[in-house]
Image 1 (tube, rainbow, N blue to C red):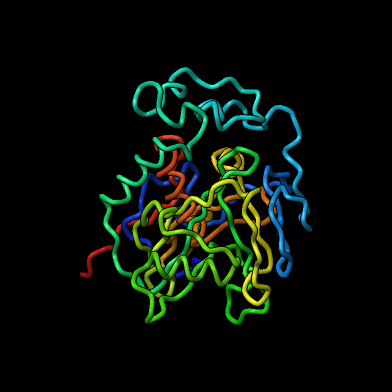
Image 2 (cartoon, rainbow, N blue to C red):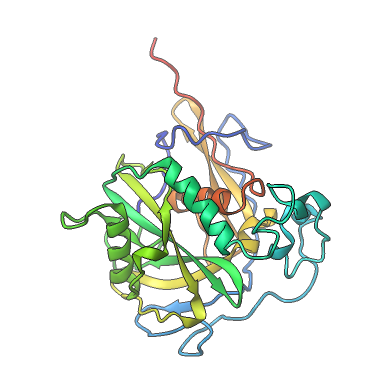
Length: 311
């Protein structure tokens, strides 16, 4: 899918408080970091593999034990998302958004209670038509909630070959809706048939930098160890997962300020310290997904100033 670029404001309506340290001159201030060992895995395209199943997988090591380099900021996360962090969770974080006993507190944002809450919220937002759709694949790896990403093949033409993305593409005339597009594209790219019953709903549609509307469709693939993926090497170079604990850790969150002709333009999120940087439209969809799954535990980085009315 298309990624974010400079010189436009295609994400109007996603604005939140401007990140601390935002400079009106549009200077880039994206924190850096090294490679992280994740509780997921990497599947090279062209191989038939199940994560955790040992069939031509690589890089499946879990994070090394030790204190997370978070300076205590991770304490705001649910205890279930801190398996490798030695920072004690805050008491108010244990209570969850409902006060006590929420699905997130029980240790599984993919539980039945969490799914019902997310489905209700997505249904309330409606399902607008779009020219393209992506699947946002929720999954679990060794019992830990994660998101699955793809690395677009460098064989693809266009400026986004080699970029991190979710499986997806343009709507075909035969597709009944955005869900059908997302499921078809996932089957073509990853060789896996996702059941319609696994779909939780549709996030708000987003325009790419060319103005094409994209519908993110959220679905739960279940335990990835039990799922066989066959990435299409013509479209997908690599498949990898990032645990929610990784995405929610502030040290792995960054942002980039973009310039326009008049100066500061807008700010977009970046997720760092994984096998590949997650940025652009994929990062915005990831941000919306985190807000859906663990409300109150992620601070939005996207900032798009309101357009000035023409004089």
